[in-house]
Image 1 (cartoon, one colour):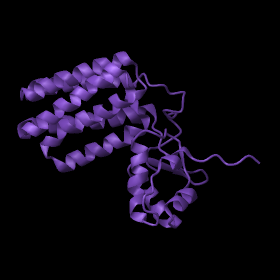
Image 2: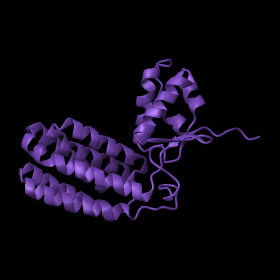
Image 3: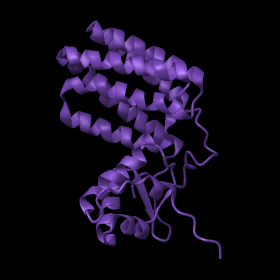
Image 4: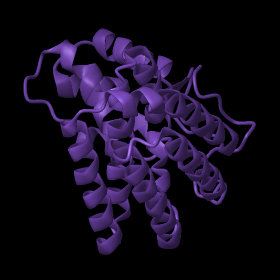
Length: 241
């Protein structure tokens, strides 16, 4: 019998202090959110417990929390896996993200400090660099940072927590990695216009540009492949079980 292949997720986990169950949740979440392991990647409970030097109980509890966050799914006879969204579910999460982000923008513009505005400029420069380097992974990462920096000054902490959760659910898909360069360039043009409106404190223009940006996003994610395992067939999965 050939040796059992090691889960790709196990190779990404970092265990600096074995025997500390409190770090398991954060480390599993980190690995899933950084996009290094695709949807449907196995999360073997026994091997994770051995790696962290703990019993199955804290690993199972961590996985239950991640199921509640929509990042992990569980089949009674199939074990735990990184969650896989259907195309419809992905679109729904983008709508949630749009609604929450737009609700925060006016307050963000009003409350932003000079440091907040400078952070947005710096992230926009990193986005431009990712475009020049044709680095999809960097573009995906900095795009999220841009939207976080755009909304964080609102200080609407419960709303921002919900927005973070909605972003997290979509992270295993790594949408911006799987679209074409031309689409990334167009999306970045929107980012630059949003930055200009934010810096000018023009809330009406910012909301108008943001609406157009989200319509463009909807069209782009509709082109993501559904036959490569990136997204699930509509009848096969629910985000949270």
